[in-house]
Image (cartoon, rainbow, N blue to C red; front, side, top):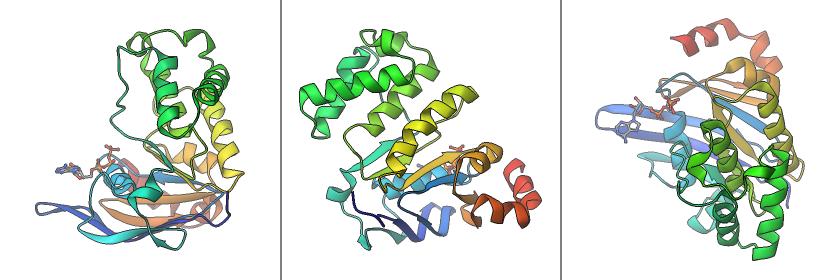
Length: 235
Ligand code: ATP
């Protein structure tokens, strides 16, 4: 992978009727860094991520990648974990993930090898043949993140990947994400949990009522008005 594969969000805006769910948002997801996207309920994180992925069109502003406006073809190389989890409940875990890997351009045997390794690493090695609906929500979430990581994605956009997981499971997933940042991939994930994001990420972007209220390294945020951001998050 090339370095410097930043995702640049510039003036991104989305109105629903009179409400500006996302209002002139600017930030950069730097290649090779883990960036946490933090905000309370309704702050606009999901709407922003949908626009990055092209699922929703912006009212104004743009998303750039590798220095130019991102295209639909570029986005085929992005791994995305949407808020609506979108797994087929009746299909076996392995079959479903292999299928998704094939869509990402892997051969059947490469997809199977990759899926098997990911399942092992997330503690699901024994569950490969089970139908998705038999899994707990936490395990379905693990399956969903594997789907996003298949086939050497060139960027990762993950909506609440850690919600409801215990700390050991979070660390496990972060180890997987680090393998992608270490080859230069920009990784953006959303969370309600400021503490978690401060611990995990090189960069944070804090969103409140559709606007970026703070952005920078954890140290920078800690040394500034983090108390205010905590209030914003809880309010
Ligand atoms: P959460 O963490 O609860 O998912 P969020 O930060 O992801 O919150 P969004 O889901 O992006 O926030 O929602 C931002 C605002 O936009 C909310 O007020 C929401 O009600 C509104 N909104 C989002 N999608 C739509 C839609 N399709 N139509 C109307 N309003 C919408």
